[in-house]
Image (tube, rainbow, N blue to C red):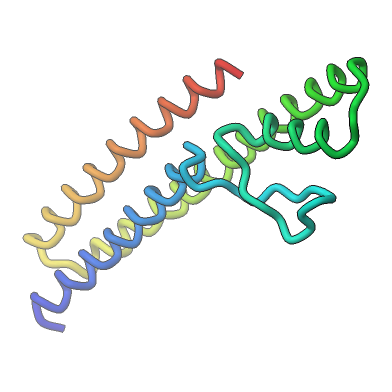
Length: 143
């Protein structure tokens, strides 16, 4: 395999890695929202900036909740949302760990010059990921 081909492969892998992190960031920041299924929308719609608030609004509208029901269900949904964020974070942590196991395997197939470039791409992507995790942790604290 020639040098250019190896570099292209390394760049493609790094690009895939970065795309996965960007997608996770968009989903966790609710710029892209997971589907929220309600009785009125069995196919699943898109939630707003806060999934629990969106579900609660749907329940209020369609079920005509009493004030007591509203308080209890709001607390339950807030707890659900916090747990869902924790699950997302755990899954992201597992994906990061998996990629960290992969990077040495990729490096062994690269030239010294390619390894240097690859290391810079991985470090830059890891730095962005650390910033993103820090913002997630901060946002999760405010729940």
